[in-house]
Length: 188
Image (cartoon, rainbow, N blue to C red):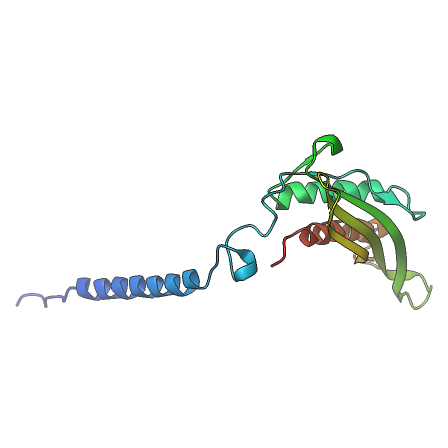
C-alpha cells in the first residue's frame, strides 16, 4: 500500500500572498490619497518647519528670576532641541536667518504632598514660565511670539525614590525646550 498523497498547499499560499498584496495596495491608496504635499492642507509627510529658514541664533536667554543659571540651562536645552528636531542649524547672531529671544519670567516650586509625621515635602512641582519671540533677523518681523508660556515637572523626594529637587527642574527645562521648539512650526 502506498502512502497517501499530500495535497500541495502552494495555491493557498499564492492566494494568501495575493490577498496580502491587494490589502497593502488598498491601504496605500487610502493613506496616500489622504496625504498632502502642504502640511496646512491636510496630512503630510513633509516638514512642518519653515523651509525658507536655514539658521537660527539662540542668544542666552534673560533670567528675571532669582533662580541661578536657569537662562543658560534653558538656552542650551532649546539649542539642542532645535538641532535634534528641526532642519535648522544653530549659528551666531551675525549670520542667522532668524533669532529666538526669550526671558525666564517666573519660577515656582509647589509642594504636592507632605510626609504625615514630619510635614516635609514628599512630592514637589517645579514650574518655569517664559516669554519668547522668534523673529526674522533679515526683516525684524516677529514670526512667533508667546507670553506666559510654561512647563512643569515633578520630583518625588519620598522613599524609595528619593529624587533630588533638581530632577524636577531639569525635566521642566527639557519639557519647556521641546514645547518652545514645537511652537516654531509653520501653521498646520
